[in-house]
Length: 98
Image 1: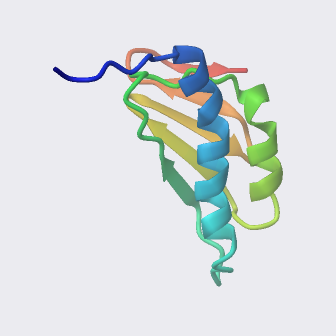
Image 2 (image 1 turned 180 degrees about the vertical axis):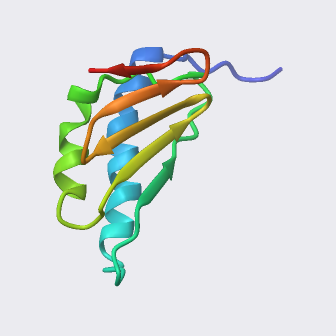
């Protein structure tokens, strides 16, 4: 009989920002010349769209500011630019600013 593991969606969601931060930090440490635009694929199975507000991502913006001309997150059908402008684009609609 398989073991059951409890699933906490809030815990999964809260783990998202640190996981994205680790991916960005890995790219920051490479010191690319010239600095590229950064696209981060966010592969969380829990959500089919970006469930973080742009304001929740401020720590990510701070990491990117001096290293990349622009930083984008691709998550399911959503695209979010977090640096230099902050906005989300959803596949089923126009741009949504936070």
